[in-house]
Structure formats: C-alpha cells, structure tokens
Length: 469
Image (cartoon, rainbow, N blue to C red; front, side, top):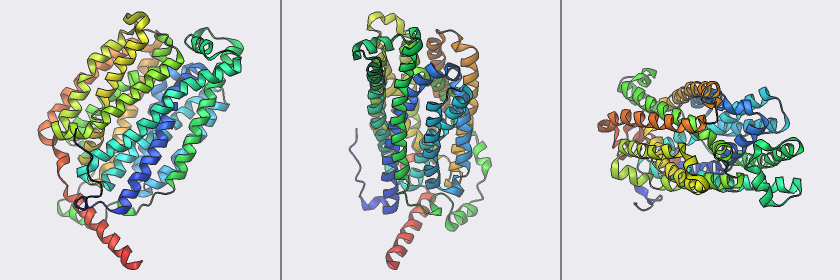
C-alpha cells in the first residue's frame, strides 16, 4: 500500500481555510461515529424490546428519514454546510429523548425517522464538502481518513455499548455480570420487572449517544465557510455557460442512471441485512448480548482496515474495478452468514470471522465510491445528485421495508433468507457497474477544469484577506 501523501505539499494548492474545515469535520464525524455505534446497534436492540412493530418495518422509517435528508440536500446550495450541521444534532438529540421517554409506538416510529435524517445527513456532508475543499489528487486519501475516524469511534462505542447494557442490567438486578450476560442471550424469556430493568439498561447507553451529539454540535460552530463553497461563483458560471449550460437533465444521462441503479441495487442488499445484524445474532443465533457487541465491533474494525486500502486500490485497479471486485468478493461470505446455524457451538467465532471478512471486503472501496460519485457531476449539481440518490434510497427502503414487514420477517428464518437475496442483488449490481469501466475507471487522476477555477479563486480570496489584514 502506498505511503501517506504529503498534505503540506505546495504543489497541491490546498488553501488553509479548506484544510481547517476538513479537519474540523473529521472531529465532527468522529463524534458521530460514536453516536452511530449506539444508534445502529444498541438502539435497534432497544427498539426490538420497546417497539417491536417499529423494528420489522425499520426500513420504511429509514426511507422517510431519507426523504427528509433529500429535502435538506436540495437546499444546501442556499443554506451552506454549516447551518445543516448545526441543526442536525439538535434534531438528533430531540428524537433520542423522545424514544427514551415515550412508549407510544407512533411517536417512536416518527422519532426514528427523524433520527435517521439527523444522523444520516452527516454521511452526505463530507462527500459534498471534500469535493470542494480537498485537491483531487488526495481526495480519496482524505475520504478514507474521515471515514476511518468515524469507524474507530464507532467500533469503540459499539464494543462497550452492549457490555454497558449488561453491566447496568446486572447492577439493577443485583446479580453478577456473567449471569446477566447469559440472560441477555435469551431476552425472549424475560418478563415483568426483569424485562423492564433490561429495557432501562438500554436507555442508559442512549444517554451516552446524546452526550456525543452535543459535542458534535459545539464543533460545528468552528466551521468557516463562504458562499462560493456551495454555490457557483461568477467565473464558474461563465465557464459553464461558455461550454453550454449544464442543467438537471444531466442527471438523466445514461451513465448517471446506470450508476444510480448500481447504488440502488447495493442498497437493497444492505437494507435487507445491515439493520438486523444485532437481532439476527442475538435472537436468531442466540449469541449473548456482550458477545454480539464484540462481533459487531470487529466488523467495524474490518471496515476500518478496508478503508485504509482504498487509496491503494484506486491507484492499482482504478475506481470502477475496485468497487466491483470488492463488492463481488463478499457475496460468498453472505451465503455463509445465512447458514450460521451449521457452526453449532462455534457459531460466535465462525460468524465473527465471516462477518469480519465480509465487512472488510464490502467497504474497502467505499471511499473510492464516495469520491467517484461526486466527480460524475459538476459542483452545482452535486447536492441535487446527492438528493437524487437519497430519494432513490428512500424508494428502495420503503419497498424493502414493506417486503420485510409483510413477508420476509413474518418468520424468524427470514433473517437468514435475507442474506441469499442480498447476495444476488450484489452480483447483478457489480455486473452493471463494469459497463462504466472504460470511461470512468481512471477519472480521479486528473484535476477538472472546474476545480482549477475554484483553486484560483480561493487563492485570490486568501491574498485579498492577507492584504486587508
């Protein structure tokens, strides 16, 4: 794997304000990783106890959250990044408090949809910001850096999340940790005060997520942006008009449609299995709650390792080939996940290894994908493109949510069948993506004309500030 690029190399023409915002966002996204370590794991298990009807249709509420994100993304070219990053944590805190203090299923469902929007918007912000703030030559590296930071904190919090639940449960019940851990592996048999105490234990971890969100809000206040960061300047507008105006019809071009179709197919597979990891491991395979946290933490570290290889993969194989091969290589492991029961008493170790490998391979090219999709359209259309993909995700989420709640998850075996279906979608998606290989495989190696204009304008703005100082 190639070494770390020299971030202070003058040849990069990386302006100081751009660099500052990038590193501030790394801190913000790191804090959100800690929040995600709870919302993607502990919170889902909590909802399975407090509002099981919400869990079976989880993807529907996720889809509603995606629609809300799409609306926010459409207006980013007017509001800018900072305002969104100030409002998002406030929304997130309010929804988590609502889920803690109410037992009303409808309110919990609405809160989960809003939580998805509040937390999920951060996943769309850094591709938009970094496509403006980071020179193309080191963009995949910086995408990897911000994603790795997010995963490190997510892994740490995920690891301790389940264990904190068991520890708090043991203290409330007045029993030993080991005994509480055994009980956590058979939560279906809990009733009365024991079940109530177990649910209370989950709430204590959600409060920790609220604390991390408050810190993310504070950090967002340190971002410094200009309108030119998220809207076209006069020079960029003139350059675009000189080459014939770009409009929203660009989003209907064959290549864009093909790439969005690829994303949609991958999302179908992800929606079928990802939200249900803790439930599948805990309830279906009967792996103890603390062990589930360890397995999911190892999965997160596998993602981290995969991200570190992204710059090397892009340089060695190109963008399209890296994404296709890495995604395709994880499909045999999906089939093993579906047959988890065959491992008998070794199920925890076996599934832990399979999930580790699957997560590492599936996510190794994710920074490449994030960089590539922002390079497919000009800056003025990037928020619209992100909004389009979010709407597509929402439609997919609603479809998958209806399928899981009405059919697939009516029977516990559906959690395993989902892996077979997901593997099939992954194969079809990769075959489609390879159609774009010739045109886009090496697109990230050159600075675009638009980026040259942006760089020159930022240099002029900084010189003007120095003269006025």
